[in-house]
Image 1 (cartoon, one colour):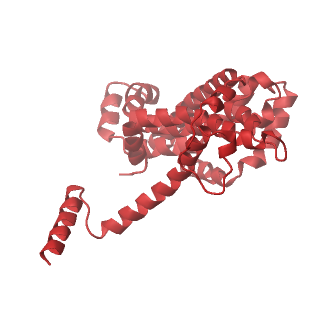
Image 2 (cartoon, helix red, strand yellow):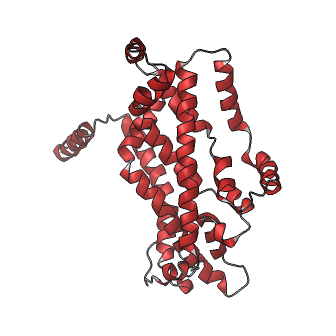
Image 3 (tube, one colour):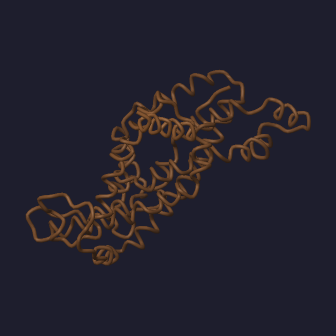
Length: 294
């Protein structure tokens, strides 16, 4: 009995140290279970990237390779992945920067400027989220071909500049912008232009980083639009290029393709993971600030 009480006391102390109650424990366990389920495919992907082709398709799942090889990564770089990576950096970097800047300006206007139809415009922005991307892909592709922009950087970048999430997160942040700062700036003769660039935007660093990380990841992993609009091999992005590693069923490359494809996808995942972990503190802060309205 004393031993049971001691174990219970230790459990309570452990919960108190982490500011958890007994009611929070099931939620914490459920969250950890979901996190583990999300992590399992990633673990299998990285593990498979270090396996020999003959060890990939086995009767039992091998979470850790019993024979390790880096040949799959060497085969990845037999393709023009450096060129594809450069295209992805240019496309994702420029598109994300323009998207965040446009979202900040639109969010500021919808939050701090008074004009007729402001709520209606924001409602239209949110309603556009219900329109599937596939609906607009074909008209945009035909337009790009007609004006001669197929297989160009402007075709990869411009259609991805608009993002409603960026507008939303900045609008929610600027709704909490202190009125005292705005009034002080106006007393000094600042208009909306100077107020936005010199005061509001520098204070929006956290939501700016959060929006940048999320939108950069979406642009970096974008597959459908670059697949359709790039006809030249040299203009492919990494996701489209790595699709070439997909094994062809019924051929001798089927088993080899899985391990090489996993190595390629691992390489593709690294920039987004590094960006998130480097900016993790600002990312979480920006999401929390952009989700609240005072």
